[in-house]
Image 1 (tube, one colour):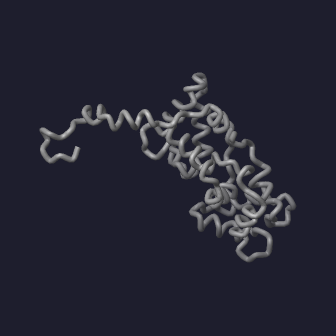
Image 2 (cartoon, rainbow, N blue to C red):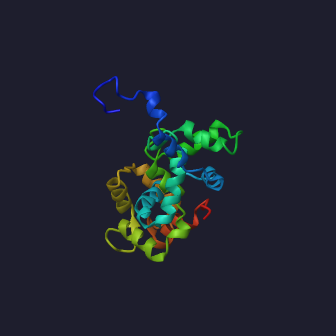
Image 3 (cartoon, rainbow, N blue to C red):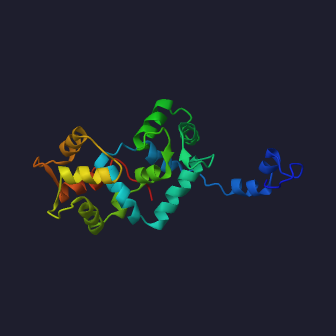
Length: 210
């Protein structure tokens, strides 16, 4: 392909027919129907949980990351590094031909944190990890302390806003109000460790099958 002589340079067909591509196709990861079932039941994460999961992925085991990466690559058929609506629909319709497009669009909306109509690997990873299986009390406390800047065992409104801004997830006062309303169950204007645990672990609507 890099030959300076155009007469000796491979054309597109010769490139695609090359044995290297045959080998690459044969090594392509296969879709797991159970994984797709879990993915189809995913729910949208709130901004606080999305931020926590951004920090949390460094605690995921290598074996789980490998499984998630393989499924991402199996769906990303054009190897672009992103999953678009066409690729996601093709993956699901392999096992469920009658799945409506509205369901596909809804899934992308839930996972697509960047709001660019496609799913990056980091977004896919955050949306499909199993927090219940991977996080123990020590790891949850480490995450909590990353939000609790002053170390008073609570996450205040100001700490929450500062952390989200630092993670390029800026939010308005209205957004902060919604987060506090949802997760500050004691209504004391701050998020305790127990409330943080509930948000991160026990409020999951799904869990990946091991």
